[in-house]
Length: 485
Figure 1 (cartoon, rainbow, N blue to C red):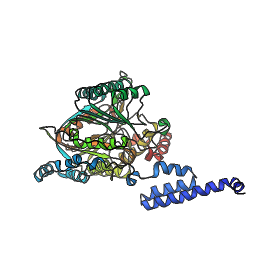
Figure 2 (cartoon, helix red, strand yellow):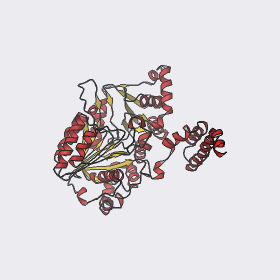
Figure 3 (cartoon, one colour):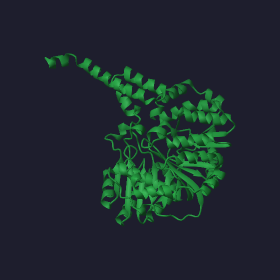
Figure 4 (cartoon, helix red, strand yellow):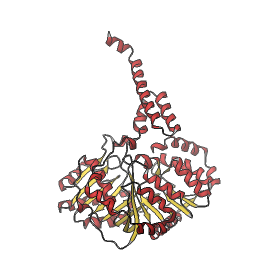
């Protein structure tokens, strides 16, 4: 009798179960007190699209930053790591000198200092690395000279030509007794079983970040580790936009040109960078790390260049990188020069850029003309009219694909890292940037930006308004998916 009743009313029961779950999800959304438009959008999807709405909410609607499912505090509780907080606490005289130099930019230093994992480090040597060929030349030399440990964390690692060369080097170093730890994103990377056997046989410890069964189909529906970090002996570090793949090295002899920027660091900033790597390692290896003082050696550097390593992701309490960029834009007096491959921002960033430009600040945005993502390209284009109307100067790179993620402000502040100006980088992906408070470095990055403008076209508002209507339709469609791109 019961079975017959269930069979005859199966769809009614399924729909009833759906709406019980919908009521639960909608109640959870209401208690979060997030943006009203976002709240109504999710509730509408839940109500109108049975089951599909629940799937969308499961993948995209949950705020993991607050849920703390990525809690990786074991590393922070280590005595060796806790001592770093005292080591980098600035004295009143040091803080005064920094305050005099930075003026309004001290707001950013103080903002980031409220996060105990983002200390200001002063003694650093910095080298801006332009494009993949230069990066890998330097990186491979540093890897071959490693004596104690090698730590690598990449969003994209492929065992193609350049990837195989890197893997061969770290395998050789592991056989020599160097501790090699490697983590790569399971969706972004592509490594064969043969290569994994080579790594394992050589003694390289490696883990995929949040493995998925079908990465080609999963795409960007998960939280991904978008960071690109290399640390050698705790003395030399790399951070920036360049992954490990042949496309970053421009092997195709002119048929495809990839423009990118990376940063090589020697000095005190390696210690907080090491902490962030170890927190990731703690998560991917699912075990407590054996953290020794040898991972945090003292590096004697005479050069004074202030650097903060700032990370952001579902494991952080705040959207640190976005907040840093907002303060940088809002405190600009003369200019803001931004390079990003994906400009799919939130309203706060758009408003900040508009206000700065309308206030007389020289705001320039450099984006690619041709993108590696059809959806991201058209979503980006949907935001350009608002910028142009506010007198933001928008340039599109025509020499190839520009993948650099940089900002330079007022000859005083610059940042190089992994974060794009988009929803994913601000709220979903694990990202990491170096915030640099130094005139020499800022002027060099400014010069790179102005040089890249020579291979770019400037958009005018009149010309942009006259673009075909079918392009505007594609942009509007792509923009609907902007929080997910």
